[in-house]
Length: 182
View 1 (tube, helix red, strand yellow):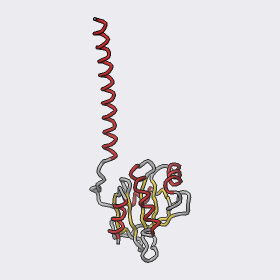
View 2 (tube, one colour):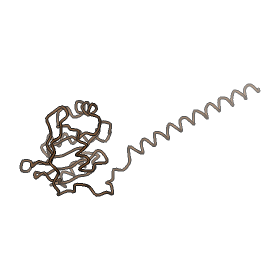
View 3 (cartoon, helix red, strand yellow):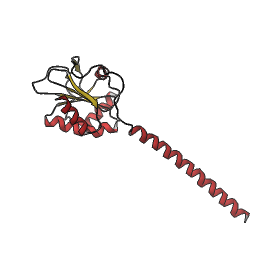
View 4 (cartoon, helix red, strand yellow):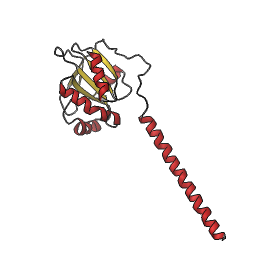
């Protein structure tokens, strides 16, 4: 009888420890989800380059392709869509196909600006972009525009001025940004 009581107590302690481990794992997952689903609001600081102002002219080194010119005048009626992404950003990977489709449709000339190590960006370009748009790593452009959260998009009009900018987390946000820039 005493042996059965001892065994049942040991089983209860093991089950209680198991519940504790499960509770810690769930708490960790809630934290991860909380960070991933954090609202994408605009920051309180003033942007360095406001819409309507000219961007500095830059020639950025392309990753696996030719150099990319930013801030240069474009052909009449043309716009440039800069999409700032990171290889390890799940929202960026969700937005990228919509941006590539917009670029291929002629709505704007898409330039993907990557943030991260060059090797990871090169792999990202091969697997996600597959030559459908130029890819560049341009920390200086991110600093000029004060990009602090990803994915972020900026639209440059035919005169080389910033027409619109903002955080994007789906294709509808990209389309709205292009509409606002018109």
